[in-house]
Length: 158
Image (cartoon, rainbow, N blue to C red):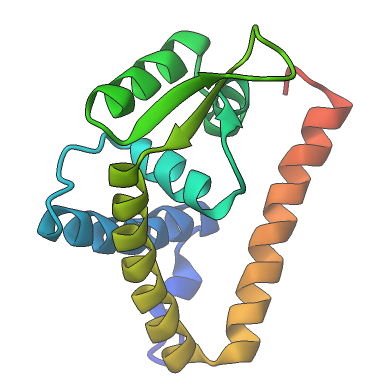
């Protein structure tokens, strides 16, 4: 590696993604801890943040798909978040067999703390690399996500 080559050019993209995710995760965890929400399990950040962005609730079946976890795993995660006051369960009006999870007042407050931390990281990233690079990053990540979805459509077992 010559001195003109940035260190990240010699790291595989998957490792860069993992470590970049840690930057967001640590900032959000620190903000949640400081605000008194230190009891949210790992994937709980994804659920609370996602519910805050989306309109209304999400069926547990959708959480299973998005998190790539089992029905049992999703149920345990939701149980934990319900018992700690972040989520509530309600029957789906359209399909009584489905359970919808929504944020409680406590969950909404945690989501706001999480969003503020995420916004700080986004703002710092934008200041460091500029809007064109942030747009290119979003495009590249979106392409990776689309590649996964396309592979699933071709082979649902994939």
